[in-house]
Image: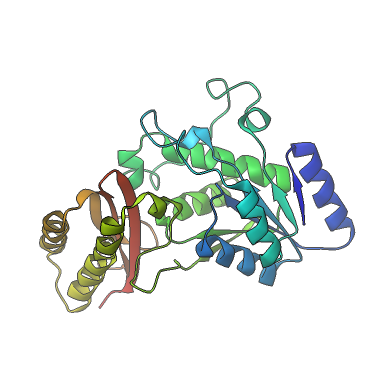
Length: 283
């Protein structure tokens, strides 16, 4: 496994792989890798012959008061995990390589509708940053396939829409959320939790399960279901950012033609922002 830091280097490596007839997979990450990221890599390895993992803490997707400066940078540990997993190439650029003229003058990609509300509502400009860096990575690596986690459900929807709208020849694969034994979705930000908060954190997924059970049990008073879950979270010590029910395929309001729902949430536990979701069949 090699690690490169420039666009020219990753393009040269991918060119060599293609000359050997290999199918190229891409796994974009911000590093600080955990078992969920490694699951993405293994899926890419199962579908492709040459897997590139990008590690880039993308400043364009962070707001002015978010954790860009404190976000964990753990390249050496990440390299060891990726070597063990069987990745072929790590692309670890710095901000100057990705945005040579800075952020203000850089072209941005915006995906309307699907990026609105939920995380897009509470983090203005976040998905413009995500769509921009992913489209740039797609153009740099030109992969046949790319793998993203379903934990970031709205992000995956934004990337699917962007790929479709721009006619990009990349097959997008969604990987199911990896969870700890107690149900907490694996996340790099879980490391911010105190031991006491970590014990409490699985309550979020438990409330999403309660929402799904209520809807599957025949209830259609969605606002009341959401409010009950919100009250449980607040009573447990969470500060909800959002809690919502959507059509899983369109991220619009559930309607008579909806076949699958998704309960989505973002909450603060102390200073840590946790996100999670749960897809379920509609009755």
